[in-house]
Length: 481
Image (cartoon, rainbow, N blue to C red; front, side):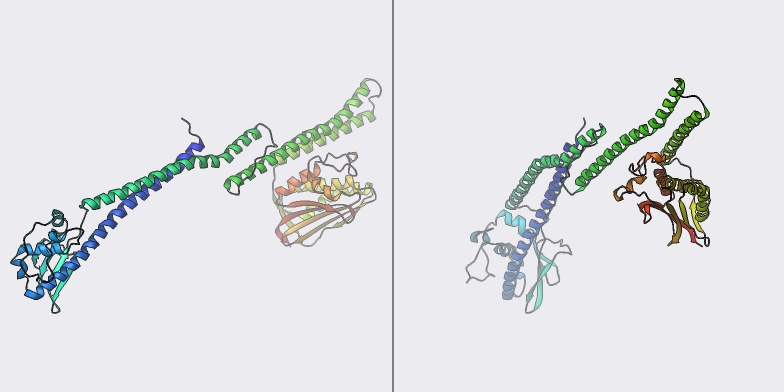
C-alpha cells in the first residue's frame, strides 16, 4: 500500500509527539517516585529529631540507658511519642501529662500496626561505643547517625534506616493519583497532536502538490506555467527556482523556434536563387554560358558557407569543437591573419591603423587554428560592414596578466540597445549592416564560443570612429616579456 507524503508527515509528527509524551511520562514518574520517597525520608528525619530530644531529656534523669533496657516496651513508647498527632492519637502514643516524669513506667498499650511497620522497625539506638541497644543490629555504614549528648559528651547515637519503597496505603494512593493525572495529561497532548498534525501536514504539503502539478504542466510543454511564492523558507526557494527554470525553458523554446525559423529563412534564399536560375536555363530564358554557371557557383558557395557556419556553431554548442592548445605569440598570430586581408581592405579603400607591439611577446595558451578563425571572422565582419573610404584600427595591449585586442571600425554603427545582441545567432542589424553584405549573422556567435573556450571575453560597444568597437581579452600564459 502506497502512503502519500501527507500521511507520512502526519505519522512522523504524531510519532515524534508520542515519543516526547512517553519520555516525559517515564521521566516524571521516575522523578515523582524518587522525590516523594525523599520527601517521606526527610519527614521521618524530623521525627528522629523529636525523638532524640526526648531521649536526651530522659537520659539526664537516669545518667544511663538502663531505664530503657530494664523496660523494653518503654523504648517503643518513646518512639511512638515522636510521631505527629495525625499518625497516632494521644492514647495510641501513650502521651503523659507534662508533670509526669518520662522515666516513670508507662502503661502498656497496643501501638498502631502501621507505626510498628513503617517507623519503629527502622529506628535504632546505639551506645557511646556504637553497640546496638534497640532496633536493627545490622546497620549500614552509610546511614547517618545523630549523636546524643549529656554534659557535652556523646552518650549514644540515634539513627533511622531510610525507606527504599513506599508501603503506606495513603502514600501509595497519592502517587497513583498523580501518575493517573500525568497519564491523562499525556493522553490529552497526544490527542491534540493528532488533531493538529493532519492539518499541519496538509498545509506543508500543499506547496509541494502545487509544484508537482506545475511540473506536470511544464513537462507537457506549457512553459508559461508559474507557481506562487508564498513563503521565504526552503519551499519558497524551491518555488522561486521552479519559476526561474520555467522562464529559462520558455526562453529556450522561443530561441529554438526563432533559430529554426531563421535557419529556414537563410537556407531558403540561396536555394530560391538557385532554383530560379536553373528553371530559367531549363525554360531557355537563360543560356548555360560561363556567366550563368558563375552565378550558380556563387550561390552554391554562399550556401556552403552558411551550412559550414551552422555546422561549426552546432559543434561549438555541443562542446565538440577540437582544441589543440599550445603556447603562442598572440601578436604574431594577429599579424599573420591580418596579412591575408590587407589586399581586400585596400580594394575597398578602408584604411588600416595597426598598433601591435614588436617588443615583448604576448604569450597565451590557445589553439592557433581557432584563434585564427576568431580574428578572421572579426576582420571579415569589419570588411563587410564598413563603408568604403572608412577605416579600421587594430590594437594589442597587455596589462595585469591580460592580453587585450581591440577592433574599432568606422561607420555605419549599431544602436546602443542592440550591441549585446550582435553575438546572438543569425542576428543582424537590418538597417545598416544588412544581408546585402552577404553574411548570415553567425560569425560573431562563433567568435563568442571560441573565446569562451579560451577563458576569455568578447564585448561590443560603440566605436569613437563611428562604427563598432569589438574588444577581445585573453589571459596571458607568461605575461608580456
